[in-house]
Image (tube, rainbow, N blue to C red; front, side):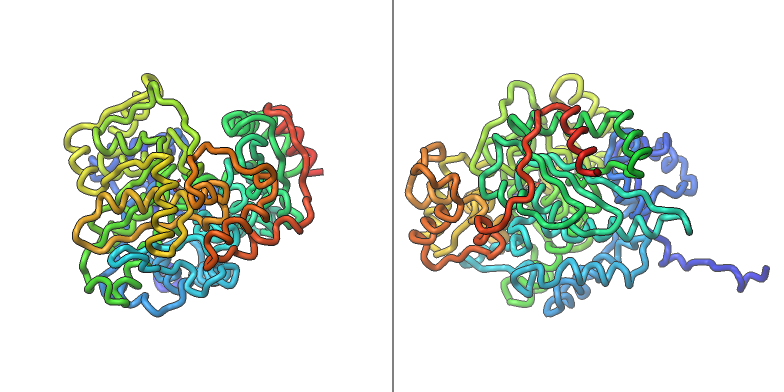
Length: 537
Ligand SMILES: *Cc1c(COP(=O)(O)O)cnc(C)c1O
């Protein structure tokens, strides 16, 4: 064969490779390979990372390098449709999928399923304080920003990796949810080829509005089950089923189905979140709120550290970000970590707050930030300490780097509700409790530069606490009988107090929609397995 007959891809066509936070993937110590200067053994590319989710050895996949955007490239995004901005940013990450496919999927994902054409608009709520509204998608929470994209890419990845002529097994996405993720994943996976989804939610633990969002979900490939007990019971049962080898073998044999999970440690959920940081900066510069290249702060309501970590990668790509402020609620393990360098779970009790999507003690995605700052050997050591003793403490050098990038703090439950009422009174802007935590912390930590508060949910999703806030009540105050059971009445009551507001259609017509799934099962692995088997027929 002549050299001209060989298909040699140019360097720029090579896909981005991934390594993992613990340096254990493929049994290789990537640290050592690199130290020896050896040509890197090619790690997995995007589609592999997307389908696998978790790296072998228990770590998380991370990119081998972070691509750069020039300031000109960032500024040039202003005025383009959001899907085009997304395509330009994705192109830099060199997915192992045809770029036309990626562009088509992004156009579908960020189309008229969002209720504003900008998709992720910025609102200057107070001079110099902007809210980035990430809740205009079909489920009214920021999870849509990733979960409208990831399932589409997942389907494309399965097709791209299939052996010619061989049948592609279906993937069943198993989800245990405390609220927002379940609905966003259902909406993202419904009707997608080669995938099915089964969502389990705790009967004691999601609001009536959230429950109705899930049990009225359309689509032939979806199933939803209530689980007796709280979120912990639900999550343990689903995890046990997920890790049961017999169950996995049975699903493959009888139904040609493999299990997967769509949780926020999947790189396929992180990458789409980088886009809105870049996009927001382009909009800020275009509006004159910052001059080109001037740095801004972002304040992010944080649970699993996924959203704020995407901000970190955006900064690495070149977005002029000064501080990433990590806002916690009363579950303040991250705020304490950023203040002291000690991540300590011992003696901490889980607190229920008005911002349940941030009620988390183990922030899985923090591991990626630690890897980027300190490398795989340190991460292995710290994660082992965390497992054995419930805490770890980073070294002084890592702490200095961490403090350079991130600031942190927390806001109490009652302060959160007071903030909702006050900002509504002062600015005529109604925040949901998650965004309110970030707003309040941003007020107290503001420096002399433009600041973006990342808004993660529409207020109507968390009506009970928004109503308490507007009525000047305390977080645990009981509400009038009947309101909790009837989201429609609750929202009507809020609209009396906040007459300029409106409720997205996806939330306002829920009571009229037929319930498709009303089964409640026991909180055990056996019950979860039996439910999955029934849903497969
Ligand atoms: C998931 C979620 C968060 C937390 O985001 P992380 O990526 O887990 O830090 C904050 N607010 C809302 C409304 C959410 O749904």
